[in-house]
Image (tube, rainbow, N blue to C red; front, side, top):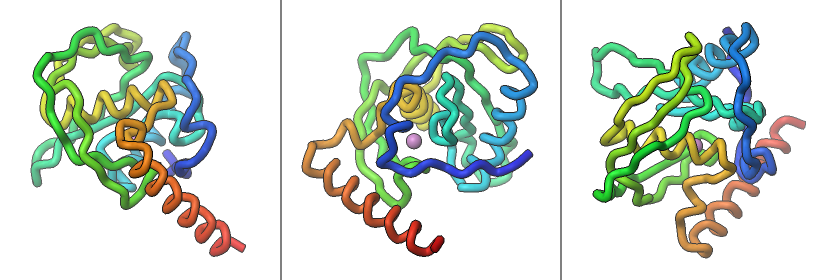
Length: 175
Ligand code: NI
Protein backbone atom coordinates (compact mmCIF):
# COMPACT_ATOMS: atom_id res chain seq x y z
CA UNK A 1 0.00 0.00 0.00
CA UNK A 2 1.11 3.54 -0.67
CA UNK A 3 -0.08 7.05 -0.12
CA UNK A 4 -1.15 8.82 -3.30
CA UNK A 5 -0.85 12.60 -3.73
CA UNK A 6 -4.22 14.36 -3.45
CA UNK A 7 -5.03 16.77 -6.28
CA UNK A 8 -5.93 20.26 -5.09
CA UNK A 9 -8.63 22.54 -6.50
CA UNK A 10 -8.56 24.20 -9.00
CA UNK A 11 -7.68 21.37 -11.40
CA UNK A 12 -9.51 20.23 -14.56
CA UNK A 13 -9.50 16.62 -13.28
CA UNK A 14 -11.75 17.70 -10.41
CA UNK A 15 -14.27 19.13 -12.91
CA UNK A 16 -14.53 16.09 -15.19
CA UNK A 17 -17.10 13.29 -15.31
CA UNK A 18 -15.58 9.91 -14.43
CA UNK A 19 -16.11 6.70 -16.41
CA UNK A 20 -17.84 3.63 -14.95
CA UNK A 21 -15.56 0.68 -14.14
CA UNK A 22 -16.21 -2.39 -16.24
CA UNK A 23 -14.33 -4.93 -14.14
CA UNK A 24 -12.45 -5.40 -10.90
CA UNK A 25 -8.83 -6.47 -11.21
CA UNK A 26 -5.67 -6.26 -9.10
CA UNK A 27 -5.06 -2.64 -10.13
CA UNK A 28 -8.50 -1.63 -8.85
CA UNK A 29 -8.02 -3.46 -5.53
CA UNK A 30 -4.61 -1.81 -5.23
CA UNK A 31 -6.15 1.61 -5.98
CA UNK A 32 -8.87 1.08 -3.33
CA UNK A 33 -6.25 0.08 -0.71
CA UNK A 34 -4.10 3.11 -1.54
CA UNK A 35 -7.10 5.44 -1.42
CA UNK A 36 -8.20 4.15 2.00
CA UNK A 37 -4.68 4.58 3.34
CA UNK A 38 -4.46 8.08 1.82
CA UNK A 39 -7.88 9.00 3.29
CA UNK A 40 -7.08 7.75 6.83
CA UNK A 41 -3.67 9.42 6.69
CA UNK A 42 -5.04 12.83 5.63
CA UNK A 43 -7.15 12.40 7.84
CA UNK A 44 -10.50 12.39 6.06
CA UNK A 45 -13.78 10.45 5.97
CA UNK A 46 -14.12 10.12 2.19
CA UNK A 47 -12.03 10.17 -0.97
CA UNK A 48 -13.02 9.83 -4.65
CA UNK A 49 -10.77 8.40 -7.39
CA UNK A 50 -10.46 11.67 -9.40
CA UNK A 51 -8.89 13.27 -6.28
CA UNK A 52 -5.91 10.98 -6.83
CA UNK A 53 -6.02 11.47 -10.62
CA UNK A 54 -7.89 8.27 -11.55
CA UNK A 55 -10.91 9.17 -13.68
CA UNK A 56 -13.05 6.15 -12.70
CA UNK A 57 -16.25 5.87 -10.69
CA UNK A 58 -14.82 4.60 -7.40
CA UNK A 59 -14.89 6.10 -3.93
CA UNK A 60 -13.87 5.11 -0.43
CA UNK A 61 -15.30 6.28 2.88
CA UNK A 62 -15.42 5.60 6.60
CA UNK A 63 -17.53 7.92 8.72
CA UNK A 64 -17.04 6.09 12.03
CA UNK A 65 -15.82 8.85 14.31
CA UNK A 66 -16.40 7.61 17.86
CA UNK A 67 -13.20 7.00 19.75
CA UNK A 68 -12.55 3.27 20.11
CA UNK A 69 -15.31 2.29 17.67
CA UNK A 70 -14.44 -0.24 15.00
CA UNK A 71 -13.50 1.26 11.62
CA UNK A 72 -15.81 0.61 8.67
CA UNK A 73 -13.78 1.10 5.49
CA UNK A 74 -16.12 1.05 2.48
CA UNK A 75 -15.28 0.86 -1.22
CA UNK A 76 -18.06 1.84 -3.63
CA UNK A 77 -17.71 1.12 -7.35
CA UNK A 78 -20.10 2.76 -9.84
CA UNK A 79 -22.28 4.13 -7.01
CA UNK A 80 -25.71 5.54 -7.83
CA UNK A 81 -28.21 7.37 -5.64
CA UNK A 82 -31.49 5.48 -6.10
CA UNK A 83 -33.62 7.40 -3.56
CA UNK A 84 -33.42 10.63 -1.59
CA UNK A 85 -35.48 11.75 1.40
CA UNK A 86 -37.57 14.91 1.22
CA UNK A 87 -36.11 15.91 4.56
CA UNK A 88 -32.92 17.91 4.16
CA UNK A 89 -29.92 18.39 6.36
CA UNK A 90 -27.23 21.05 6.63
CA UNK A 91 -23.66 19.98 7.37
CA UNK A 92 -20.48 22.01 7.45
CA UNK A 93 -18.50 20.32 4.68
CA UNK A 94 -14.84 20.29 3.82
CA UNK A 95 -12.82 18.46 1.17
CA UNK A 96 -9.32 17.00 1.03
CA UNK A 97 -8.91 18.78 -2.33
CA UNK A 98 -9.85 22.13 -0.74
CA UNK A 99 -7.91 22.06 2.55
CA UNK A 100 -8.88 24.32 5.45
CA UNK A 101 -12.04 25.65 3.75
CA UNK A 102 -15.43 24.76 5.21
CA UNK A 103 -18.99 25.78 4.38
CA UNK A 104 -22.57 24.75 5.15
CA UNK A 105 -24.16 22.65 2.40
CA UNK A 106 -27.78 21.50 2.35
CA UNK A 107 -28.49 18.02 0.98
CA UNK A 108 -31.14 15.28 1.38
CA UNK A 109 -30.90 13.95 4.95
CA UNK A 110 -31.15 10.31 3.83
CA UNK A 111 -30.19 8.55 0.60
CA UNK A 112 -30.31 5.04 -0.76
CA UNK A 113 -27.25 4.10 -2.80
CA UNK A 114 -26.57 1.12 -5.05
CA UNK A 115 -23.02 0.13 -5.94
CA UNK A 116 -20.69 -2.74 -6.76
CA UNK A 117 -18.37 -3.90 -4.00
CA UNK A 118 -14.78 -5.06 -4.42
CA UNK A 119 -16.19 -8.63 -4.31
CA UNK A 120 -18.11 -7.85 -7.54
CA UNK A 121 -21.48 -8.08 -5.74
CA UNK A 122 -24.19 -5.45 -6.11
CA UNK A 123 -25.09 -3.78 -2.82
CA UNK A 124 -27.78 -1.36 -1.66
CA UNK A 125 -27.79 0.59 1.57
CA UNK A 126 -29.60 3.52 3.11
CA UNK A 127 -27.36 6.18 4.64
CA UNK A 128 -28.24 8.95 7.08
CA UNK A 129 -26.42 11.56 9.18
CA UNK A 130 -22.78 12.13 8.30
CA UNK A 131 -22.72 9.01 6.09
CA UNK A 132 -25.47 10.49 3.86
CA UNK A 133 -23.62 13.78 3.48
CA UNK A 134 -20.32 12.02 2.82
CA UNK A 135 -21.60 9.58 0.19
CA UNK A 136 -23.36 12.41 -1.70
CA UNK A 137 -20.25 14.61 -1.53
CA UNK A 138 -18.07 11.76 -2.88
CA UNK A 139 -20.51 10.78 -5.66
CA UNK A 140 -20.53 14.46 -6.68
CA UNK A 141 -16.76 14.20 -7.19
CA UNK A 142 -17.35 11.45 -9.78
CA UNK A 143 -19.48 13.96 -11.72
CA UNK A 144 -16.95 16.77 -11.44
CA UNK A 145 -18.93 18.59 -8.76
CA UNK A 146 -17.36 20.09 -5.62
CA UNK A 147 -19.11 21.21 -2.43
CA UNK A 148 -18.18 24.82 -3.23
CA UNK A 149 -20.36 24.55 -6.36
CA UNK A 150 -23.37 24.74 -3.97
CA UNK A 151 -22.22 28.10 -2.57
CA UNK A 152 -22.98 31.58 -3.82
CA UNK A 153 -20.58 32.62 -6.66
CA UNK A 154 -18.82 35.26 -4.56
CA UNK A 155 -18.03 32.80 -1.75
CA UNK A 156 -16.92 30.17 -4.27
CA UNK A 157 -14.60 32.64 -6.02
CA UNK A 158 -13.13 33.69 -2.68
CA UNK A 159 -12.29 30.08 -1.78
CA UNK A 160 -10.88 29.40 -5.26
CA UNK A 161 -8.64 32.48 -5.03
CA UNK A 162 -7.31 31.27 -1.67
CA UNK A 163 -6.64 27.86 -3.19
CA UNK A 164 -4.78 29.32 -6.19
CA UNK A 165 -2.57 31.21 -3.73
CA UNK A 166 -2.02 28.09 -1.60
CA UNK A 167 -1.04 26.03 -4.66
CA UNK A 168 1.37 28.75 -5.80
CA UNK A 169 2.99 28.75 -2.35
CA UNK A 170 3.29 24.96 -2.41
CA UNK A 171 4.90 25.10 -5.88
CA UNK A 172 7.38 27.67 -4.68
CA UNK A 173 8.25 25.59 -1.62
CA UNK A 174 9.03 22.67 -3.92
CA UNK A 175 11.59 24.62 -5.98
NI1 NI B 1 -14.24 16.15 -1.40
